[in-house]
Length: 71
Image 1 (spheres, rainbow, N blue to C red):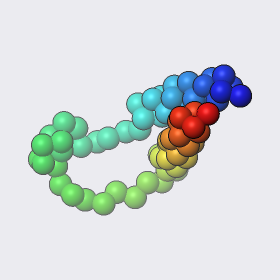
Image 2: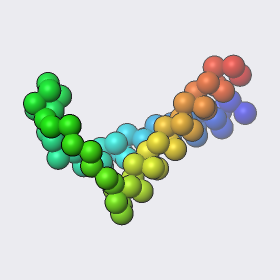
Image 3: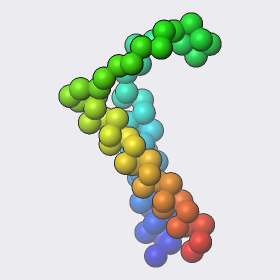
């Protein structure tokens, strides 16, 4: 059982890294140090799908990590 969960965890980790890299940030490095404006941007289309998928995969990744800790 733990081997299956470990394989799923590795696949989810790879997918999560890929989805994070695919997301577009227009603000750049200056926003990291407070240089960017704080405008609310509404996600639409493919960007919204990527964001939602990233959230769900990160929740599944965290849940499986907790499950592996208790097994």
